[in-house]
Length: 258
Image 1 (tube, rainbow, N blue to C red):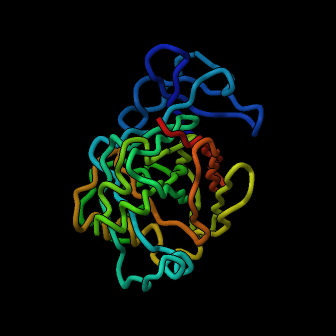
Image 2 (cartoon, helix red, strand yellow):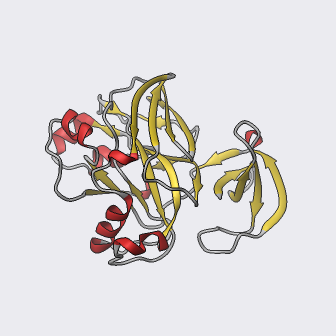
C-alpha cells in the first residue's frame, strides 16, 4: 500500500495511492494512517491535480546513518564503521516533493545523497532484529542534503545535515516492500550521479532499527535514513535533483539560493 500526504489547497490530508505510474490517483482516507485504520472518505483525485507533501513529519526525530555503503565510505576518505554511525536531525529540516531546497547563506558546498528512508509505525525500544518488521510502518525516498564545508568545519554534523529544507522526503510511503535489494539512484538535471543497491548496505534495515532503538525510544513517525551509495557531489543553485528508490518512486527537488 502507498500512503501519501497531500493538499488540494485546504488542510493536509492522507490518501492511498492507486493506479499505474503516470495514471495514479489518490483516495482520501480519514485521519492519519499512522494512528487510525484506513477508512476511505469517498474523495478521489488524480495525483497530478494535488500537491504532494512530505508523507510524514517526524513527531520526534530523524536518525541519520553515516557511511553505510563501503564505496561511499571510501570516497569520503574514511574507514568502514564497525557499528552504525548515527546522527540526529531536527524535524524542521523536512520538506516534501517539489519543495525548494534552500542553500543556506555561508555554506558553499551543498551535496545531494540519495537514500532509502524507514518510517517507524509504533513506539519501539530495544527491538530485536527478528521483530523489526513489527515496528516499521513503511519506506520512502530521502535526500540527505549536506553542507560539506560546514560538516568539515564544525567537526560534527548537526548544522551541516540539519539546516532547514535539508531533508526532502517523498513522494509517498510504501508499507509493503522487500528492501533487501532495491536500486537506489540519484540524478542531477537528468544525469545519473549515483546508482547503487540496498543489498550493498553495510548494516541492513533490521540492524539499523534494532541498533537505533537500543539508544533511543522510537516513536511513530520517526524516520531512519539508511545511508547513501558512492557518487555524491555538489549542486549549484537552479539544479534539479531526483532521488529514486525502486518500488517507491521518485522524489524531485530544485536547489535555490535566497
